Every structure is written in C-alpha cells, then in structure tokens.
Image (cartoon, rainbow, N blue to C red; front, side, top):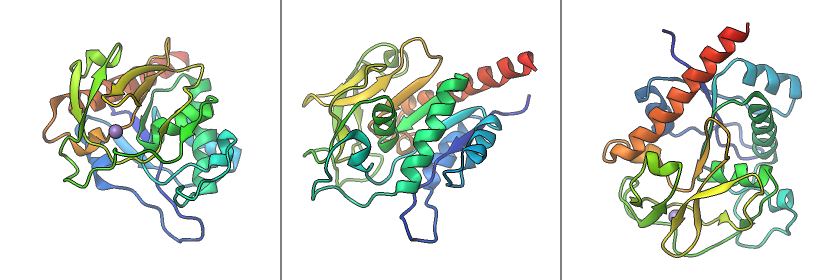
Length: 234
Ligand code: MN
C-alpha cells in the first residue's frame, strides 16, 4: 500500500532567500512510514488548498516566534524574528486541514500556532525551558493525560527549546501534557482523529525514546486512515 504523504512547514526569515528544514523532522516521518513533503510558502489560497488536497497529514514544525499581533498583543522586546509569510501560510493551511478533518501534528512553535489559530494566546518570553544540553537529552518532566497517555507514560522526561508557551488556551483545545512548573506542554482537540500539539521536540528523541517513536507512528497511522477514507469517498 502506498504510504501517506505529510506536508511539513519549513522555517523562513522574511527577506532571506532560504527555507529551513531540520533533517530530524523528515527522518522521523520517513522512519514512521510516511513520505515528507516540504511546503513552499505562499499566501495564495488556491495554492494552499491544492497543496493540502494533495496530502494526508500536516506537520507544523518548530521555529521562530509567531507575530504577537496575531493574538492581539504588542510585540515585546523579547520577541525574536518573525515571518509574516510563514505565519499566514500556517494559519491558512491549518484552517483547511481542520475543514478536511486531516491529521495535524504541531511541534513546539506548531503547538503554539494551533493555539493561536483557534483564538488562544502565548507567553512571549518565559524562563527555564531553553536547554543548553544535547537535543535528545531530557530537560524537564511532563505530566501526561488522555489521550496522549496512550502514547507517553504519565511522567515523561522531555527536551525543551522554547521561550514561548501557551498562555490562554484556545476554547477548542484541551491540555494533555503539563510541565512541572505549570506550563501547558501538550494540547489536543477532542473529537478529532488526530490534532495534537506538543511543546517538546519528539523528532529529536526518536533514537532514545520509544514514546517519541510511537507519537510519529500514531500520527502516520492516522494519516493512512485519512487517506483510505478519502479513497472511499472518491
Ligand atoms: Mn518545556
């Protein structure tokens, strides 16, 4: 059976002639049995809807900060570089993915994009969650609840590279992981086949953490189910 195709959103700095994609994302998707497709960034709605209609899952990757104007705040001096192009592409792609009922995995910034797209807000700069150790090394523990607890143990050590985090949780989302110091580290959408955002970087832990591998496998499994469902409707 042909593998599902998953659209990955790359990083971009306005004015720079590059797209950025960490190898670990494509590697995690391939090892979990799917085909990663790196998205070109454009705000044209026909382009975005054609791209989304061609794939079976959406992975919102980590990256730079989201422009705080999107959640109605002034930009603090702690806010890093932003990309209007990436922000707009991801918000539009996510809206379409929701309309289609397509599986979505958000990682770090991706979890924040999910929250902001649905009306939540972010801390623009919070302390203590940016580790200096190696990418695969855990930095703090999270307490995991349903449905993520089907994948991760109740107390899971995770890595941490963020300085932003969910402040006001969006109405449509529920918390499924929380850090020891009380920040939201995982969200999901009740009733959706797979709409999960995590604040840590499981793609950097697949070599050492079976739960990180299970998360990608569950995601690609749901993308396969989405693909098969689409076929039946043709
Ligand atoms: Mn963290």
